[in-house]
Amino acid sequence: MSNLVNTCLFGDAKQCLESLLPKYAGKVQMCVTSPPYFGLRNYNFPGQIGLEDSVEEYVQKLVGVFDVVWELLASDGTLWLNLGDSYAGSKKGRSSDRLAYFYGLQATNKGCGSGKISKTPLSGKLKTKDLIGVPWRVAFALQDQGWYLRQDIIWNKKNVMPEPVRDRCTRSHEYIFLLSKMKKYYFNNEAIKEPTTYIKDQKRNKRSVWTLSTQNDPTKHYAAFPPDLITAPILAGSKEGDIILDPFLGSGTSAGVAAGLNRKWLGCELNPENKDIQTERILKLQTRIRKQNSRHMPAV
Ligand SMILES: C[S@@+](CC[C@H](N)C(=O)[O-])C[C@H]1O[C@@H](n2cnc3c(N)ncnc32)[C@H](O)[C@@H]1O
Image (cartoon, rainbow, N blue to C red; front, top):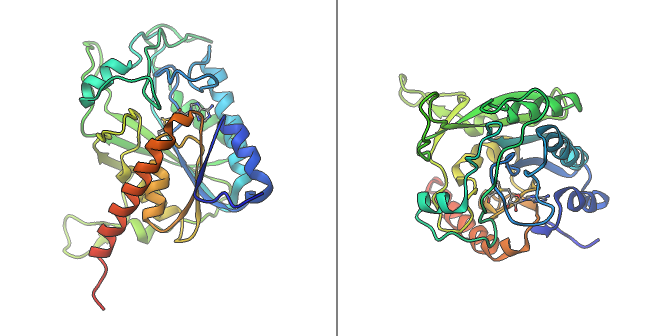
C-alpha cells in the first residue's frame, strides 16, 4: 500500500478507514471530527450518514465508524468529537436555502451543500418536540464500547441562526467530547493554556467552554469547522509530525489546520465533489497558520 499520509480517501468512512488498517493501525495520534448530525441536513449523496430512520440506527453507524478509529489510534491517542443535537419530529432541519441566506451564499447541492430534509424521525419513547440528546447518546455508546469519556467541551457559538421558537431558548452551543483509549493518554495542557484575567503574565489551564463564531468561509461547505475550534485539540492532542485523522473531512478544515501546525493528516469523505474545495482550503489554512506562527516566533 502506497503512502497515504496527507491524502483524503473518497467513499464511506467505515470502509475507507478499514482500508487504512493494514498500514496505519496504531499509528494515528488523534482523531478530530464532526460527523453529519442526526436528521439535520441532507447532503444529497447515497450512503450518507445522518438520515437514518431512528436515532438508535444513527448511533450504531457512528459506533461502527469509531470502532475502526480505535484500531487506527495509538494506544495513548485521543478522539475529539464535535456533535450537535436535534429535536424529535422537527421539520426544522436546516435547508440549503436557509443556511445560504444566513451565510450570504448561493444555495447549491454540490459538495457539502445541503438539501431540505422532511422530519427528524421519532423512535423509542421520543415524542415530537423532545430534545433527542444525540451527542450524549453517541458519547455513552462509545463509553460502552470501551472509550474513556474524559470531557464535554461546550462550543458556545457567538453567532447563531435565529430560531422562530417561543417556548425555549435559541440553541447556541454544541459539544466537543474528548475520549481516550486508555486511562493515561497524550495531552499537552501547556500548549493550550490561556491567560488569566487577574494576574499579569500568568497562564491557567484552558477552560471547558470555548466561545467562537461559526464558520463564515465562502467555501460552499455549510458545516465546516471554524479552524480555531480545532486548533486547541490538535495542539493538546498531538506533537509536530504526528498523524491526525478526520473520517468526515468535508471541506478539509482538520487537514488544513493539521498541516499549518506541522502535523500529517489522513481523511475520508463520502462526496468526491469536495475534492477541489479541500485542495483550496487546505492550502489556504496551511499558509495562513504557518504565517501567523512565524510572526510569533521569537527572533534569534
Ligand atoms: C459536518 S460535515 C464535516 C465538515 C468538516 N468538519 C469541515 O470542516 O468541512 C460531515 C461530512 O461528512 C460527509 N459524510 C456523510 N456521510 C458520510 C459517510 N458515510 N462517509 C464519509 N463521509 C460522510 C458529508 O459529505 C460531509 O462532508
